[in-house]
Figure 1 (cartoon, rainbow, N blue to C red):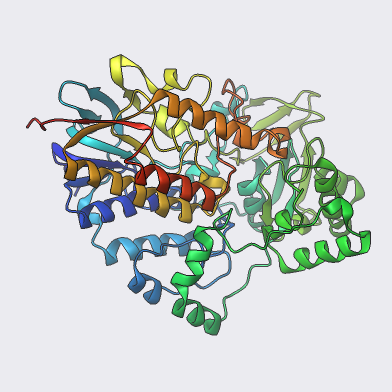
Figure 2: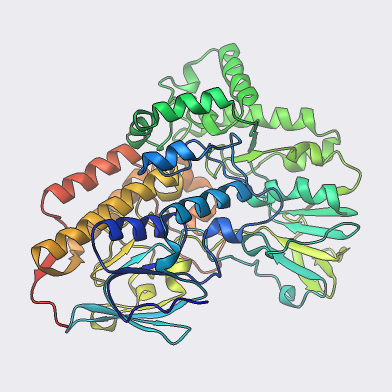
Length: 541
C-alpha cells in the first residue's frame, strides 16, 4: 500500500537511489521531519531500472558502497570485483531494511511541479498522485542518469517488434531466444549488453555509430581473506579515497608518456591490460591533456582489438576514430570483442551508412539496406544531469523556470545550488565531480554537506538560503577553466550533452578532483556558508 506523504515537511527528498536513501537517513538522525518520494514502485534508482543483461558497475564493489555506518560495512560482503546489477540492488535493499528507510518513502509518486513561495519561504510541491506538500527545503536526489534518451530516428516509436531501452529494462526480463535482435549504441551499456544478447539471440545485429575504447574488466570473485582484511581497516581505506582526485585508490603517474622509452610504455600498458580496469587512464600525467600522449595508449588498445577480432574489416570498424583516448568515458568489457567472432553477430557501421528510419520491423539505412528485427534494443544513454530536473516544472524566484535559468548550460555554485532557487539542493549533479568520480564518495560528501547546511539553518533561525549570483558565476567559470585544457573537450560525448539533440554543448562536471573539491566545500561551510545569502526570520505555520 502506498504511503501518503505528509503535507508539511522540513525537507522533501526526491529519489530513492543511493543519494536519496542516505539523505533520508541522515536527516532523520538530525531530528528533521523528512520524507522521500520515488516515481518507481521500489527503491534503487538507476540500479532498479537498469536490469539489462550484463549490467554491471565500473567502480570496484569495495569502493562503490556506503561508509557512514561501520556495522553495515561489517555485515555486508561483496562477491565480485565489479558488482553486477542484482548484487548492487540487493545491497541497496539490505541498507534500506537495516535502517528502516521504507517507512519514510512514498513509492509510485512522481513530482510534477515545485514552485517557490517567497512569502512563506517554502517549496509548494505537487505530485502525480494529487499530493500537495509544503517543504522548507528540497533535496533533488533524482540521479544523474535517470532519464533515458531514445535515438532521434524517424519511425522508431512505431517499430512493430519489441522496442527496449537499456535504461528502463522490463522488470520481468525479456525472452530473446531464437530472435533477431538489433542493438543501437556501443557505449558502456551496449558493450555490457551485446555479449549477453548474442548468447541468447538467433542473430544479433550491432548498429555502431561510434566505436569506444574498451578495456578488459578482468572481473573475478573476491578473496574472502582480502575482504575481511579490508573490513578491519575500512575507514582508513576510505579516508584515502575521500582525498584522491577520483575518489578511488588509483595510482596517478607523474611521468609524461612522451618522455618514456617505447619498451617501458608497452610494458606499462600490458600490465594494465592484464590487470583490467580503468587505471590505465592515470598511467601518465599527460593522458588527459596531450593528444599525442593519449594516443600512445589508444594505439595500444587498437592493436589488442586487431589481435582479438578475427575478421580484419570488423576489427577496423571496432577501432575508435575521430577522438583521442580518454576523451570519452573509458568502457570496461567482458567478452565484448570476442563476441564479434561469433557466427550469429554482425557489425554494421552506421556512421558510414547512417540509419534513415525504422519501417515496420526493419531498421533502414540511407543506402536502402534493411535489417529485419524482432527486438530492437536502444543502448543510447540518458539525458544526463539536467534531464531529470527539467522533467519537473521547477519554478523559483519571480517565476523563473529552471530550464530558462540553465538555457546555456547548468549554472551552479559547487554543483549544489542555483541562484534564484533558494533551499533547493542537488546531490552530485552538474558543477560537481559527480559521475567523473567514484560517485558514492561524491554522494556521501554532498549529502553530509547539504544536510549539515540544512541543520545549521534550522538551528540558527535561517528560513532561506540562496546562491549569490556572483558566486555562481565564479564557480561556473572555474568549472569551465579546469575542463578547457583537457581532452574531454574533444570527445563528442554525453559529458558534453552531445547525445541529446538541441542540448547546449557544455562540459559541466568539475575536473578539479574530489579531494580539492571537498576542501573548497569545507571552506565555504567554515566561512559561514560564504556564497549564499542567508535570510533569518520567523517560520510561518
